[in-house]
Each structure stands twice: as structure tokens, then as C-alpha cells.
Amino acid sequence: MCDLVARTGRHQQRYEAGCRLVAGCIPYRYRQSIECTSDSDEKIVEVLMINSTSGPGLLFPKGGWENDETVEAAAVREAIEEAGVKGELKDLLGHYDFKSKTHQDEFCPEGLCKAAMFALFVREELESWPEQSIRQRSWLTIPEAVESCRHPWMRDALVHGFLNWHAEKSEEAFD
Image 1 (cartoon, rainbow, N blue to C red):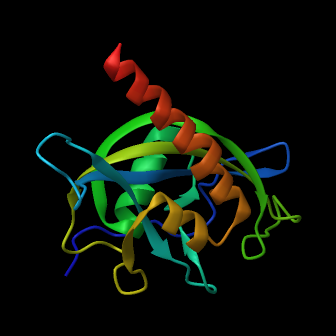
Image 2 (cartoon, rainbow, N blue to C red):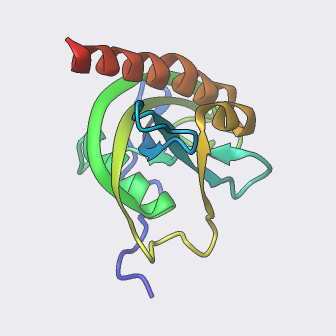
């Protein structure tokens, strides 16, 4: 049984210029390469994706940014609620516009959304989490994640946001 409870409802949602504001993250970790020799210490980047509850394909954790929290806190909360992971929230990867078919309401009849996506270095996978009865987690390599990603905007966040950010951070480590 999970002690945490997922937030529900729209009464606390943030909106800006007719768009619902959303926060999310791309959870990631490193694993040793199987083909690793003693000369190299190659690490493979894996990202965590979850199943969609409304159709095929995989997603990154994301959800509504609420009035009583920062965008960073919302991204961390969504990672816990939807994917059952905790970790170190890193940099903002970018803002991504999309249209939601399932979240049209009186404040946003068009279903327009703007997502702030962050990188999240995973330090802990919870054994139980609020949405575990409806979500399955999958650790994927970047090519697998690109192939499995349900939404083009999330694929863009992965390829142009996360990969560019990660390459930049990797270069800084060697400077």
C-alpha cells in the first residue's frame, strides 16, 4: 500500500494565455556497458518511461502545475506520482507546446498546454507509488525511447532538449 496520494482535479491548475501549464521530467540513470573492457568505463544513459493510460506508446512523467507549488516541485511530484521515482532535479530542458485531447476544460477549451520539462537524475525507485496500479515503468536506451515515445513533443524534448543538455554537461565534466 502506498502512503502517498496523487493529486487530482483542476481547481488548483495554473493557466497562462489560454494554455494549461504542465511540468514534467525525463528521469535518467547510467548503467555500465555490457561490452565494457577494463580500458573503458563506458556508461549507457537510460531514461525511464511510463505507459499511457489512454492509448499505446510510452510517456515521460508530467502533469498539471498547481498554484501552491513551484514548477520544479510540480515536476518532482509528477515523477513520484506517475513513475515512482525520486532523485535530483537538474536543469530545465525547455518549454514544449502541445494540444491535449483529454484535458480540455472551461479555462482551456482548445486543450492547449505548455510543458516545462526537466532532467531528473534518479536516485531511488519506490516499491509503491500513487499510480502504480495504472502505470508500468520501463528503462530504455535513448534509441529505444525515441522509437517508443507516444507524443512528438516528448520526442522533441528527449532528442533536442535532453540529449543536447546531456552532451553539454558531459563536455563540462571534461573541462
